[in-house]
Length: 245
Picture (cartoon, rainbow, N blue to C red):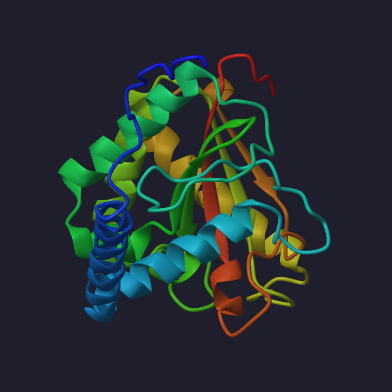
C-alpha cells in the first residue's frame, strides 16, 4: 500500500466566504443611496444652465436650419457638457487662444448680467472665433441704429476686435421676413452689419482692409421655436490669420 502524501489545505474556510459578498453588497447600496440623495437636491438655476448648454450644443452640432451652414461650430468652454463625437476638424491652437482671450476680456470688462444680456455665445469654428449678439440688445426696435444704452458694450467689443489684431467679419442676420424700413431681409441685415463695421473702424482707427461685412438675411436661423426673435443677431467673427477676403 502506498502512503498518502500530506498536502496543505489551501481551501478557505467556507463559513467566512459570505462576508466578502456581503461587504461588496453593502458598498454598492451605500453608493446607490448616495446617488439618490445627490440627485434629490434640486438647484433650479443649475438645471436651467444645464438645459441651455444642451440647447447651445445641439444648435452648434447641426440644428441651424435647413441650410446647415454652420454645423462646424465648436463648443463653448463654459458648457458643462462636452461633445461626445468630434464632428469638425480640431480647432487650431491659436484660435483657441483668441477664444480664451475674448472670454477673459468679457469676464473682466462686463458684469455677469451684461454678459448674459449681450452675448448669446462665443465659439470657435473653421473661420475663427464667433461672437453672437442678439440684435434686440443692440438696435432700437426695427431700426438699424444702435441703442444708446448699448454703446458702452459696443465700444468694449470694438476694443476687443482691435486688441486681437485679427481681421474682423461682421455677419448680419435677421428674423424671418424682418425687413425694418427696407425692402428685403438682405438689405436690413446689411445695414446693421455695416453700421457695426463703421463703428469699429471709426472708434479703433482700423484699416478698411481689416474689416468686412456680410449679409445673410433670414437664411441662417438658429431657432425654429418660440425663440425665433433671437435669429435676429450680429455675429462678429475674429478671423483666422489664413482667412482672406
